[in-house]
Structures are given as C-alpha cells and as structure tokens.
Length: 427
Image 1 (tube, rainbow, N blue to C red):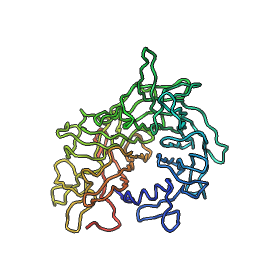
Image 2: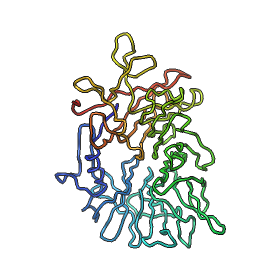
Image 3: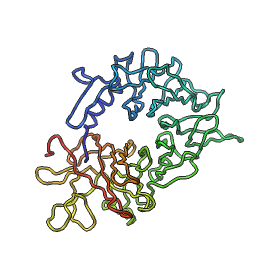
Image 4: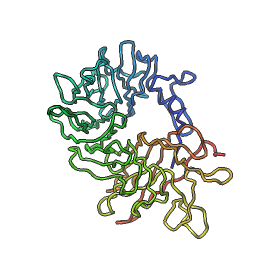
C-alpha cells in the first residue's frame, strides 16, 4: 500500500517542528487521515530559540535527536513524543555543531563539534558519541578528531556523513593528510573509533557530494561509493575490505541516488535510480530510461541472491477479462497500464511524475521480519519523496508497505503492492 503522508510544505512545517516552527493553533500535534505529526522540539521549549536544519534523526523507540540554537550557543537535544519537553544533551559556548545528529536504539547520539575559527584552512572538529540515556548525566567519548593538534586523527571530518548503530559501530567520511614533500590529502570512508580505526577506504567525492552511509545492526555499511551519479551503491563489511554490489551501471542504471537506505538486517536496500535505455534482461524493468524508487532484496543463495524490484513509477495490471490473474501486479505477459496511485474520475492512470523524485534525499526502509527463515512472508516499508503525475506542486512524503512472498523454493520474488490511499479521489 502506497500512502501519502503530506505534501512537502505541510510535512516541513511539522517535521521542521524539529526545526523551530510552531504549528498552527499552538497545538503540538497535527493529524491527517494517514498521519499524525507530534512536535518534539520548537522555539520556547527547553530554552530553544530556533531549531537548526542540520538533519534530525529518530530511533525505533521514537526518540528524536536534533540540533538547536539557544541563548548561549548551538546545542543538541533529544525529544520524545511522550515527554513534555526535549532534553538538553550538550552545548558548548566555544563550539558550533555541523551536520546531522544520528541516534541509535541505545540512545547514543553522534555530534560533530567544530570551532568557528579556521586553522590552516580547516576548522578543528571532534566527532563525539554521547550517551543520551535518560535521565543523565550525559557523557561522551571521542570517536575521531579533525585538525586538532593534540589528537590529529584526520585533517578534516565531513559533516552529515556519520551514522551509529546499537552495537556502537560508527561510520563517517574524513580527509587524511599523507606524508610527503609536499604533503598530499586523500578522502576516505572510515569505520570504527580512535585510536585504532577498523576500516579506511579511499573514495573520490566533493564537498557538495559527500557520501551518506548507513549502518546495519551488524555493522555493514551501505553507501554510494563516489560523487558521480554513475558510481555504484555497495554494501560493505565493517572492515571496508569486502563489498556486494547493490546497484551499478552494468546492472542497468544510468543515474544512482546519493542516499540509499538499508534495513537493520541488511536484507533490503532502497534507493533512487534511473534505468538505462537498454537495461539488461536480468533487471526485468518495463520502464527503460525512467526514474523510480527501487529495492534490492536478498532472497538468499538458494533463491538466486539479490533481486531488484521497482517500487515507484511502475505499471499495474489492466482489468482485461481472461488475460490476467486479477492481482493488480503487472506480471510478464499480462496487459498493463499506469495507475499505481489510482485513477482520475475520467479513468486516467495516476503515477509518480518522471521528474518528481529527489535523487539526493534519503530513501528510508524498515524490514518487518515475519519469523521464518529468509524473506518469505516478510514485508518492508519504504519512505521517500515523490510528486504524483496529476499535481504540479512540491513533492510529498510517501510510505509504501510492500508485502513480499516467495511462492516456493527457488522461485523469484513476487511483489504485491496495492494502489495508494487518498483522502479524496484525485480529479
């Protein structure tokens, strides 16, 4: 089921409640037919003057970590819908905070503290792991330092590139200074903590296209391995010495999104992509040359390994008596049409607009494990930004609940997904 939560404008006005915008009518809960937004941080709560758009995050317990501005300086808070006010975790009169604040299920928050002053071309930065378990006191440990004379782990640490999981695994991107005359620098994806980092992988990227890695529960790292839209999405081990290709140009993608998402087990990776004009038959995609949201699902070795499926901007089965199986899925040999988001009153199929996706935006995914081995009987939920074809407006936030069934041993994955639910029929 594809569900539209809200248009971006409405979503930002509330999701940026984590950014300091007070909702209308002074209530801190805003509800719609398919969603309920609760404000966890705004100006006027816990000494917050303004909440910063630095990338809030949420864990499975519903705790939200975010950065904000107070009368003293920038600060990091953790809010919860069940709490009256967010908790102040960290503030420093001499430091500013850069980038997102990822939070783990064990309530550990990563912050990147940085000086406002520049030293030899770089700010001095500390990547800190804060134990934000209530009621405190809240303590931290140093993960890595950038351009800090006493602990010169790296020349620089890039903002909005870090993630942490419940086991304490950490990943981030950094610039390393190499000895020589003259000295040179190299950009790297890094896992682990000082002083003995676990993995360091040289990677080519720019400040405008830094990697956005994400960790699984067992420490695997999903990332687009480079700044180019044709660089592959890979799932690395924690040591960054081995990887599995998730989406590549030879697999049939001419454009690959910057911010893939991975389920906690690593079984499902979701991403934005644009299929090539002549995709390989193995991809099995009917929309050559078109954009979409995709998922790479691990079926296990006995069932052929990973399978890529299109989740958004896809065809559905056309109602043709005697020519299909009436399950709504566009199977091989069946008559198909657009209409993944339903139809207008005039019978025109509604789907996601070709240019309505956000290539750099995170595609979130949660795998709902039904219990039996492998993927059989499981489902997964994917969240992404998209624009329906009948609207010429800002994108909306959608979630797709995708039940999946492996019909028998060694059979391909068949995905069943219904059309969307609308609060009123599109016209």
